[in-house]
Amino acid sequence: MRLAVLFSSGKDSTFTLHYYLSQGWDVACLLTLLPKNQDSYMFQAPLKALVEAQAEALGLPVLFQETAGIEEKELEELKLLLGRAKEGYGVEGVAVGALASDYQHVRINHACHALGLKTYAPLWHKDPLQLLRELVDAGYDIRMTRVAAMGLDDGWLGKRLTEKDLLLLEKLRDSFGFHPGGEGGEYETIALDGPLFKKRLEIEYEKKMESAERGELAITAVRLAGK
Image (cartoon, rainbow, N blue to C red; front, side, top):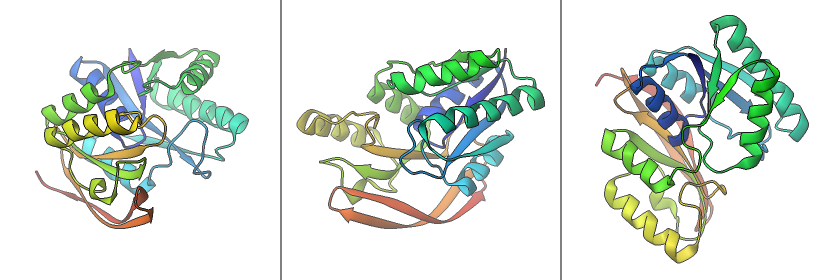
């Protein structure tokens, strides 16, 4: 099965890519949507330069598709991207990092079905903290780029997550009740290095906080470095 992986630069899509490559599947390309609307119904809004650097570090081509981030339009824009992957790379299926969003899962399934593509979601209902532990244990450099939940402050932004951080994240989940996988927008992540990466990414950034528990990394530079 020749696959494309929907890739948003964070932990879930990185784990999905890791899973299929470690199983020996033929991953032909990465697919990234770039919503103009930060409140897109289905997709995060990754930094294009960051995804380009990740793709180069991973040794995979990446296809981009801008999307208005409007509920009905983004489904058609997703189909355009999938069609390009099918025609240009001969993909037969699409792997997604969906964890728990029925809305996202159903609509991606619908778009793939319309184009005769199979859909794979290896993380569906996977324990999100276990997912993070597996990535950290495997040597991935995962960092939060956005926080928006009680218990998560600017100290989480930009730091490489460790097992100690994951234990604290679990305690904060129990105290404040947020989704530990960030499925409710509590946080977003990026991957800067790991076993799949032929080079590591280095970033420069500023922390921009709207309040004590809401803010993001404003990434100002991305570069590739040797390992």
